[in-house]
Image (cartoon, rainbow, N blue to C red; front, side, top):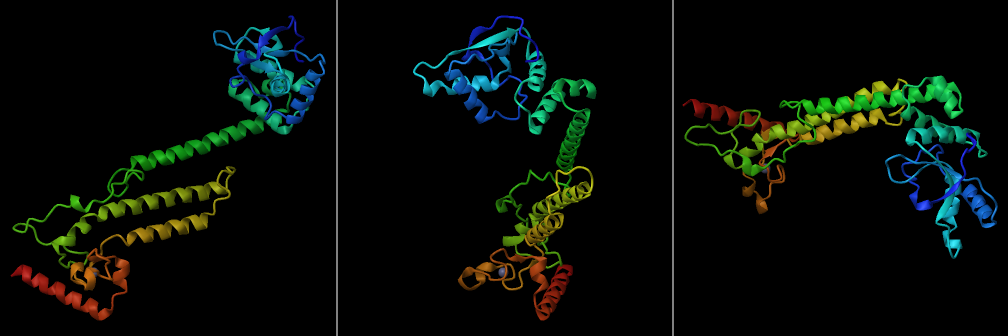
Length: 337
Ligand SMILES: [Zn+2]
């Protein structure tokens, strides 16, 4: 043990030891060790007392050394008619910091060999508790090389950078709240009922992107295009984020190495194009904005919307497009009369 106990051990209640808040300097407890210790307790072998700190002011003791022994005693419960309720312990004054110091020193010097993972756990716990201690001090406390401390510090700094970068990006996305830069998480669901009806005495009919009049019954969809635009802009923003990740991939930050950038960008492009079909580009060439006039009141072209996307309009036959142009010219003449 690190420090020769200067006090006599005394029995303390096992239930009074606060394992959750005690320092952890092993990455995990090992079953085979617990089993070995349990057998030694069963054989009434003399085992060293565990070390606890009094955790001043707080209820319960903090365990600084003896986690495997304690777990071994606890594991005896189902095997014994009267399982032990107490453990021999040496009590020290002090809180978490003192308990951690003891634990690190004891851990380095007691019998159980440490894995690299255990050593990393020690370094993490020490760096968290004493961010301002020098590399040398931490290395000595943990019984590891200084290189290990500098690696751990670099990894922590890197993790903080990544976290900061992500937070900043989300903050930025959140702040861009103008019409073309919406908050990606706050999208209104388009409600056709919220559309303002046209005052026929004052307002001209709504028109599609080519200037063709649109019947009042379906004109509301035109007013909802900005909602679609917001979704598309959010997807573009996400693509921008993916491009940032792409730049990060070649650096020392390995957080995103497995992300397939090409595929992510292509997915977002496809998603954006998919949503773009919700923008109303042209009056439906088949039902002219009156889907109810079609067989079984169902328009196979606009699917009941009365308007179609640019994508669909692109595939409309040229002679139909020509007719539409004439229709628009006639409407203009009618308006100027
Ligand atoms: Zn239609």
